Amino acid sequence: MTIIIRWNHKRFAAAIAIAISSLAQAGTAVSQDKQSTHIELAQADVSKAVRQDVANEVRIAGSLTPIRRSTLTSRVSSTIIELPVQIGDVVTKGDLLVRFDTEGLESAVTAKRAEIEALNAQIELAEAVLERNTTLGERGAASEATRLEARANLLNLQAQLRAKQAEVADAERSLAYGELRAQFNGVVAARPVEQGQTVAMNTDLMTIVDLSQMEVDAGVPTSRIPLVRLKQPVDLTVEGFPGRTFTGEVVRISPTAVAGSRAVRVFIAIDNAQRLLRGGMFTTGILKIDDQKDVIALPAASIRHDTGGSFVLKVEDGVLRRQSVELGTSWTDRDLVEVSGIEEGDVVVTAPLRDLVAGTPVAVEGS
Image (cartoon, rainbow, N blue to C red; front, side, top):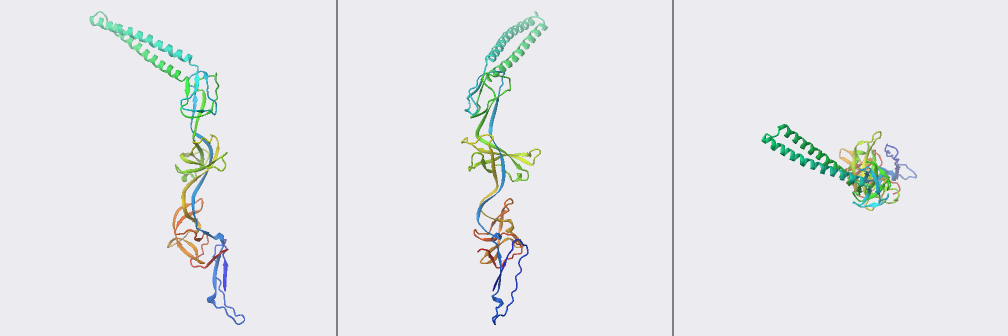
């Protein structure tokens, strides 16, 4: 006679083997050596070991922003006479973006250069006077005061010349700002001015962005930030591209949390060589941590410990067997632990049934 005790995994006490007494019936006795006791485990109490890719996951969300962008401002106060680009136009490094009316700037340069020429003439005269007074002083025909006065006049004119040369340099620089050209390949993202408009200095003219590299500024909870590392890969999905995944990489981590929140800014770079992505698109992603490929991982509850070390209970030939294991990476988010010593296909008790012991006959429900 075989008695099967069904194991209720919701209870923590192990089933106690029931002693069956022999009963005499119709002159026939059933001997005790033909009796046996089994524990039946539910399918939910065991798991079959399989190889898998496992990683902790941190979910992120944010908007895409071009990594490289430049806002051009006017360096002169003048009228825009040429504005050849519109929002959305693709520009190449060196392309003309804005041309100002430079007639006044050119006149200023010409006038200051003329002032320099006049000063050079005065300096030439002052040098001659100083030389003459020096010679006369050596002959006793001129006083020392006269020579010193001539020398001071020369030094004053030379100082004025240096000041005028600086003014000319500034005027020439302003004239150079009469044209603005693209500093890198990109796309015009904003252009708040119009041709014919007179603008003051430091007025925003346009914004150029480089779409080849995008960035996501995502907030990661402070409790999760210790898991984040530079160069960690991130799988991203972007609105407008259903079913498609973009790959990014952690490039920067803020040293402080955002004020008033419990999140740290993490910056993720995405290659956008095909120019499919645009600034402002919303994206979500999964940052994989402790990513391991083709490993056997079991629920943490299946790992048992005794004086002999770590082990699991393996169902083998209808009996629980003690199988020693070595532990590897632990994925707390997934409640999994990497183990070695178990073969793929082994059936292991994974429910927290602590009263089970090796050597117990068992049967798995439905097997």
